[in-house]
Length: 264
Figure (cartoon, rainbow, N blue to C red):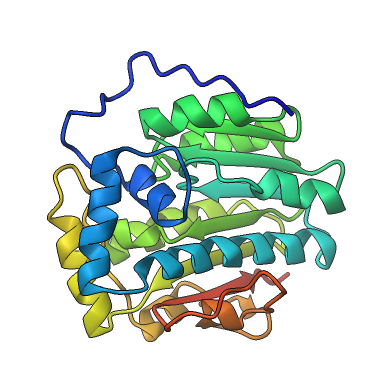
């Protein structure tokens, strides 16, 4: 397949000096859609937190395994990826499409760089993109209602993005998104925990020009997001321990993740 053509007109220039969260994670995960300043930010974080790039790759691998499980074993056909970031194949729609030919995936983000790339890489009707802040739940749910059958389960994915929001914000918009969804819907999240290494990494990253501050959370704080849900085995665990496959990279424990299912 030919490489999609991305329209870069109107996007931030490579010399505006600011670091983008989406480009930072793309660089850390080994992607190519980033600038030198984003790669320098990754290098600066690596100096205080060796292994942060491996942690970023582990989060991406966890995302791929969880959506693969949902499509292949749980029969979920509808996926809403909040804070999608830049495309990095295989993406969710590539993975779930192998198991559910009628699957529908909606990616959500509010970054102009992400908009340009996601728009170029989408595969209608299998996948689409919503250019909005995930906190704008009315807009997100309106688009979801157009593309999904909300009488059937939906999987929400938050891959290493909730650290950009306070507890009150995160619990509020997750609650609003889950409220109209059918029983058996899933909540997936991955998140770094506050080890001394991660705390130092967050301080360095948050000080970069343009970077969105990121706060790690304790395991107890992460468990609170799944209150009233059934955790899918093996529960809330280090990312690489969640149903590992041959592609799983074992890393120093920085990130934890889980999948919860809503009850009838």
